[in-house]
Amino acid sequence: MTSSSAGLTAPFALARFRQPDGVALGLVSGDRIRAIGPDELGADYLNAFLAAPDWDRLEALTTGDGDWLPLADVTLTAPVEPRQVLQTGANYRTHVIDLVVAGRPADDPRTEEEARAWAAEMMDTRAREGIPYFFLGMPACVVGDDEALVLPSYSDKHDWELELAVVIGREAFRVSREDALDHVAGYTIVNDITTRDLVFRKDMKEIGTDWYRSKNAPGFLPTGPFLVPAPFAPEGGEFSLRLDLNGDVMQDATTEDLLFDLPALIAGASENMPLLPGDLLLTGSPAGNGITRGRLLRDGDVMTATISGLGTQTVRCVQESPDA
Image (cartoon, rainbow, N blue to C red; front, top):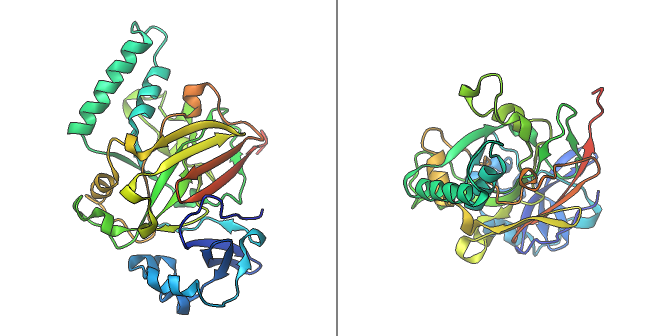
């Protein structure tokens, strides 16, 4: 698979790309990329750099000669190597309202409008009085879009969830909202794949949600292709997100619809465990998921995801053999 800088507006970004002897850390500038080692990075490895990122150092490398390669000639993979992945649930107002309406039981006496109004009031109360809802993902599920998304054969209800992901820089532990963004190294794109019929336990409803089984199959966190430095975030901090399925727009929203903004999420997630350099904090998915559209992922589907300034991610779906 060839790589492209489509949608990447930052003057430079980090990526990881495949070479015959393994995966190399790369510096991307325009339509070219070059490998950077510890001496050029000023750190032994990526997460050590992210703990105290020196973006000026990397910017200086973009004007040097180096062994630059055309970006189109390399295969990018996930740009990060997180030790922890924290995921945020129910954090886009419209998304949650749509899920409530779509999930109404057949005997629900409320009209769609009544259910929507009830959910909207619940979300507004939560935004005023509640706290973010977090759960854990498996770092092993983080892959690049160079890998096809294999749809497990144990279900036919796999869904897309485009998310803005925060890449943690300096360790964050019990940080305030005011200081939270000082602990962000950068941002990337994640598609948080979900198996909808496994979200809620049927054998013991009191347990509630089962995020391990519904979200942690191999490759269920396509990530990247770029790690964009925090200084290049959109002015005002508002990101636009869009996911197309086979060319048709499914998700199209901005982070203005977040119930809890990025400082609130970082502060809340750091309350009981340190967030480490290189960790991913997913911020939730906007409205437009397959479960609300009655159309879930199938063999041969192609998802194209863009987030303003962060590039474009293309994920191809392949159905797992029933015998796997």
